[in-house]
Image (cartoon, rainbow, N blue to C red; front, side, top):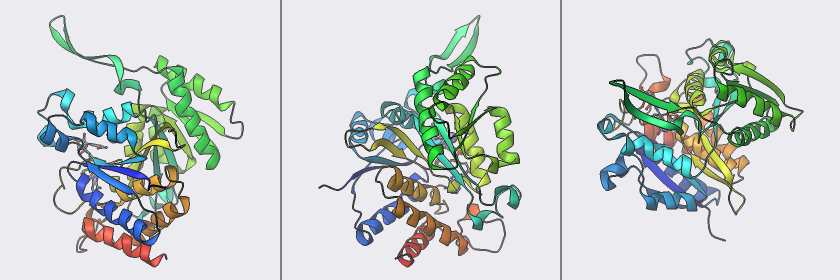
Length: 367
Ligand code: NAD
Ligand code: IPM
Ligand code: MN
């Protein structure tokens, strides 16, 4: 049987820097755990625009559709701010999500013990935190029509439309309930049913789907109150399900509960393919971090932990995923820190590659 296939799209800014560390880890699993992948690399975002005049070529899109999983670094950067909206780096990523139909974006926020002191929140508020945000990823205001900038009554008008069909809500709700069943059996759905019709429908459909999961304790919260509760008492949550835009905001906020945006992985999953694996793209929650790009400062953990999610959700290698997560945890416990995880002067931070090497050493020690 051939090896499972991976397409690596490292992207822009710190994307290639953190992905280089993931390559080391992929090679380690091939050499030491006999878990071999056929890996191909290609361009996305600004780097694809520089080479081809588009943030994602049709050829790359076709490759992404064909592989078992895509690993993505990050896209974007100030250099591309001047580009027309249709060819901005972010459009490449959005096209991947939309055309692969990756409707369920899993964004776990876990506070490793070693980082509990580092969060901007009090230690007892975040220590032991383990929540999962399920963000709808292929619809809502990111994709709704009509959209654009038009002129009306002699002034410009910016338009985006929040639009959800019940089947779109149903499928992401179902994936969140399924996850809740495998975790703490609690699901909180967040919308703004008090001001948005799409929120009213969201709440109705999630409630209907919930009838199939009587064991899961379902609650509803307005998303603004949810943001407040995430900061006040995040451990009250187990799984949160929410729409595309609220999920984008809430997951960045949740990142800071864990200490740094450089720690948060994600999995974007679609329907099962013919081989039974879900269509999948794995990427850190953070962006291309132009302020630190090219300096060897980036924390590779979010990208490394995204590969751990690939092992778990695409390749049925839960034990190896846990091995990798525990290796990251050990490295942090040993005090190896990139600059984003340090708040004291006088300590020399680890570089991106030193952090990656430390994870490899911890993997070795796990054998
Ligand atoms: P960002 O996530 O790139 O950076 C926010 C802050 O967090 C910066 O100070 C950065 O240095 C820091 N940071 C992020 N990741 C880090 C890491 N791994 N290690 C250490 N520090 C890290 O967000 P931004 O500055 O708002 O956006 C920059 C660009 O990235 C924009 O073009 C944006 O559109 C894009 N972006 C892309 C993605 C993606 O590709 N998935 C996600 C978010 C933003
Ligand atoms: C994310 C990013 C993306 C989003 C951008 C880069 C398109 O912020 O993955 O969280 O808004 O979804
Ligand atoms: Mn975001």
